[in-house]
Image (tube, rainbow, N blue to C red; front, top):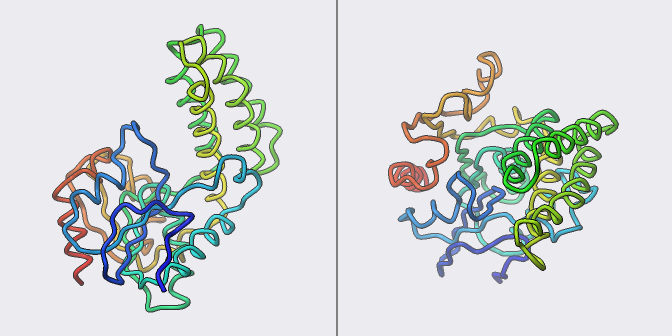
Length: 273
């Protein structure tokens, strides 16, 4: 019996049994294309689900395996045969972990990674600083922004691990962003929405740091963008050796990977294997 998911968004639904699961933290309006845009270009007839973060507030203290268990339970309860697991950028870590678990009860599906990347502690701090500066620049003075960035560094200095770091930075987001958004004319839930999204994303990044990607990606097919320093290009040459099973080099820039008709054709071809 096939059931509707509770931890995934259904991006495309077909009557057949085949399922493609995509791991990403999709946010409307981000510069990089989303899985929704990729699905619009795919011709393969299969149901497509995309992972959803836990309800706001539930993510606190959740490790990477707890995230994966939540999604995998949803997939197994859904009763469909998984044809492929896709991962985009840092979502590739979760895609690899989901692929490992799904392969325990069915034949291993394809594992397709688009510009795979692995989060680390420094990335969490850098993202907090860069994102807040870009978001707050129209709302706060230069001095106020510098104080926020320094507060983030102070949290980093005290946090024992990435999850504790995400908790502290998330609390800063909830403290600083709503008043700044209200200054910009946002009222009600709009003034708190950005803080919630950023806090949730920071936890999602932090939880992914617990995985060793090498065993998770060993069977993967990686589509590498044409953007320098992204995807596999971000890894040291020694780390890249044997990291994935196959690399397909694309000319498409990182931000356009999932809105490219050419990339969609490559994925369609892989799904027909």
